[in-house]
Image (cartoon, rainbow, N blue to C red; front, side, top):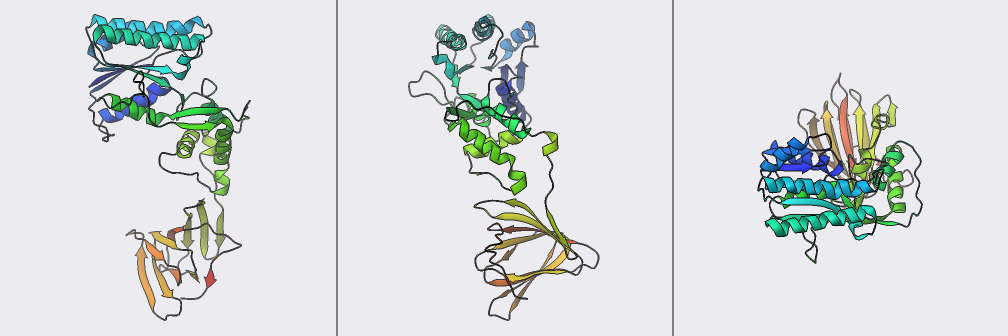
Length: 383
C-alpha cells in the first residue's frame, strides 16, 4: 500500500510517518497492513510532488492545516484551501482512494478556525458524494505526546517543556477540564483505518478514537511536578497499562533537557562494598543493586513479610537460606554467567557470599516493599 501523508512534519504527521515507516521496514509487525511507500508532503514540498503523489496513493491522510496564523484569513486558506487543492489533484488522476481529514472539536465553535474546519469537513462530504470515495473525518480533541511543539497550541506540551526545564508555568484556571488524546492511540486508530478498522461516532457523522482521557489543568500540572521530583525520591508513576498517568509520564520524559537525562544515586558504601537503591514504588516494591567485595558475606537476616528476589549479574557467589527454627541450610551457587533468580522467602534467614578472591559480586535485588527505617522488618540471625 502506498500512503500519502500531508502535513508530514507536524506533530501528528511525524508520529504517523515514523510508525508507517516502521511497518514498511518490518520493524512493527503487529499491524495487519503492508506498506510499500510512505509519501511525505509538507510546506517545503512542491505542487508537482503533491500531484505525483495523488496519482499513486492508495490512501491519503490529510493532516496539513493552519493552527495559529498571523491573519485569521489564513485559517480558510490553509485548512479549506489546501483540502480543495488536494481533492482536485485526486480528481484529475481519477484516484478514488480513501481520504482521511483531521478536523478539530473546535469545528463546533463559531470562530475563524472552527469555520475553516467545518468548511473542510463539508468539502470532504461533497467529494464523497460526488466520487463515491471513502472519506473519514476525525475531530481531534487536545492531543499530547512526544514531539509536540511547546508554546504553540498544546497546554500539555508547554507544561511538560517548562517543568522539565525548571521554567515557570501559568495556569489561569486549574479547574478547567480537557479531553485528551494520546498520540500513540491516535496513530493506532489511523493505521487501523487503512484496513477499514476505524471507529465511528454514535451518529455516524465522524470517526473517533475510542480511548480518550479527561483531566483538569491543575491535575496535569500536579502530576508533572510529581514527575519532576522523582529522580530525588526514586519514585515512578502509576504505570497501569493504558492509563493517563503512564502516557503523560512518557510525554514528560520526551521534553527532558540533556542535563536532566542523567542523575546520581546515593551509594551506601563501606569496606564490604556498596548498596544503592534505584527505584522505589508505592505498590510494587523497590529495586536496588548490591556490590560485595571479594570474600565478603552480606545479609544474615530474615523478614516476616518482606520478600526479595536476588539476581547475580556479575561475579561468582553463593546464596544460603535457612528456615527459622531449622538447622537445614539451602545452598545456591550463582554466577553472572547464568542469570537466575533466587527467592528470599519470609521466615528464612539468608546471606550472600562472594566466592571470588579478585572480582566484585554484583547483585540486582527486588524487594516487595521500599525500606522503611521505622518498620524495617529485618532481624539479624546468621545462617
